[in-house]
Amino acid sequence: MPNGALTLSESAKNMSPGGERAIIETYATSYRLIEKLPLRTRPNGIDKWNLETELPYAAGSGKRNLGANFTSTFGQTHNFNQEAKIYGGRVEIDNYIVKTNPGTVGQNRASQIKAQAREFTIDTFEGTGGTAFRGVDDWLNSQPEFVNQTVIGNNAGTASAGATLSGDLLDRLIDKCATGAGDACFVGSQAVMRKMFSLNRGNTVAEYNRVTGSGEVGDRFRTYGGIELVTLVDGKGIDLLSTTLGDGNSSTLYLMVFGEEMYSGMQVSEPIVRMNLQDETSSNFSVMEWYANSAPKAIRSVGRIQFVSES
Image 1: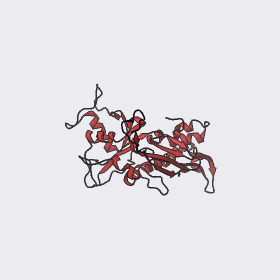
Image 2 (image 1 turned 45 degrees about the vertical axis):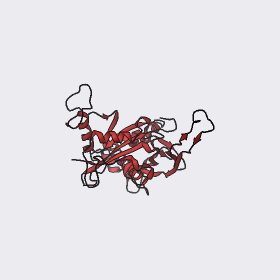
Image 3 (image 1 turned 90 degrees about the horizontal axis):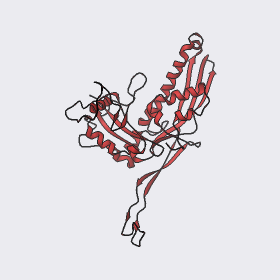
Image 4 (image 1 turned 135 degrees about the vertical axis):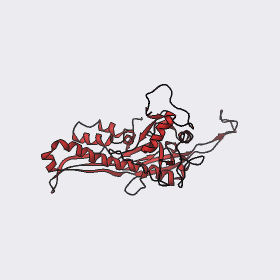
């Protein structure tokens, strides 16, 4: 990863040990996608980038020797910008708990911090602007440059009927993304990931066994084509991604490629944490303020298969 971007966990390592650092590290490690997300620092709160939409084309007999017949077109780029949104908030512990059961304070604080990180993670996919940043679905649904990043047709699902996940659909999704340009992973619900595990084991006659070598019976292989599988659930095992799309029993499988020039984020600064504050309700609380967002910086940094049957 280029030196200009650090993950939130890497940023926290630059802080002195203590409660403030612990809060940020808890937030940063709550979900795998936040762990992977490289962050540029933009003190003005606006992330700006150029999206390359078309490469220049060279033609003519002189294209290798700069001869007189050399002609070239200009490449095309689209300028984007996105404001940081506030994530984090107030973590409140009743003083009665602090005094009578201090051993639970750390767990209670961590639970509230993880809930805040959950909102950032959900907005990564479902954010539509306003108080949230634009999520992956919004980019792929409404931005013309990303219109081809959804696998459609040839046994792909539709809004009226979910489709069974297959190796062919997965390979077509991989083709849409530059998986070698960064840290790539598939992201999906529990049911969709179970189908991924089944494909890896070769459990159906319609699929070739993609596992080489020996393993224990029931092994869950955590990669497909060398790409990490991420099941997106909260601490209670509840899916963060919608599982009721289209026919009411479908969800989306995403492929994301993280990198400073691929899918990345920005922050105004490292999170600001104020600890052990008091208020008139006799509560002990802390506040974490983090202004941040994330977005695809390259077309082939994100892709998806919609309407994957959950059953």
